[in-house]
Image: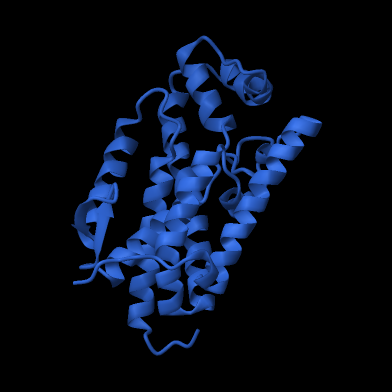
Length: 248
């Protein structure tokens, strides 16, 4: 058993360091464009549901580099810094980058799938005419900071036209990998409470699953995207373990 202390920024491996820089630059660019030109870069690069007119396939990659607030960016990058450097040093840069991208894209795919099933459960509660109205006009209404007063139409509009941003899916994949590869390493919750990495991952995953199923009103966190990152990470690690002779 060992205690875990991440490296300083100057000692970080190549991929983690560049991911930190790129995410920071995207966030600053988003702020500048929003304040100077009133242009929302997140709306273009964030992940939209495929039924939305704003959806583009490459958003499954670009959404990982967009963040909704400084604290959103900070906590994702803190976790990337804390756990990513150990994984990259263990795997090497190429394998780590593959893992990061696969878990991030996988998280986006799971988010779309979950949104699809939630929409399917609502379609029977709305007329075809009202549904077409939401699909054709809903995005513009949300851009004005408004939504439909009719509950079902409002829920459908949020599901179809809301945007998903953040590296959280990939970060949760990294967290899962750390727990699988270094299960007995001690982590400190709030820098004070010791817990083994494997139990921390299980606890965090259980909280995300509960929060995703609860689907509380006003909760704008993509909990199933986080779980998707963990799921794709688990599958990829198991695949690599079975093909341990593969060179990366």
